[in-house]
Length: 55
Image 1: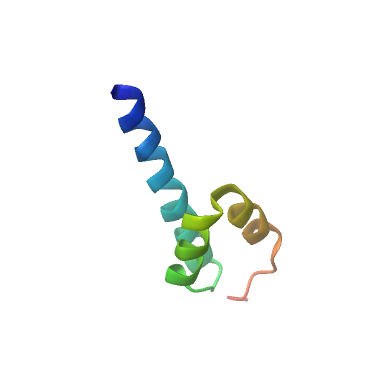
Image 2: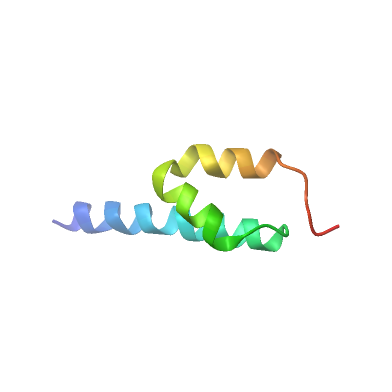
């Protein structure tokens, strides 16, 4: 049961972190949060390689 709670916590943290990074780079938090809910690791990797829009 503890493992399941930890796994669910991690599955919720990845979209939050992805959304935060997207927002700090000048992109939409909610758009990237939604993408990260479907494809967590892939969306974060894509976001890292996209150019920064805030500059």
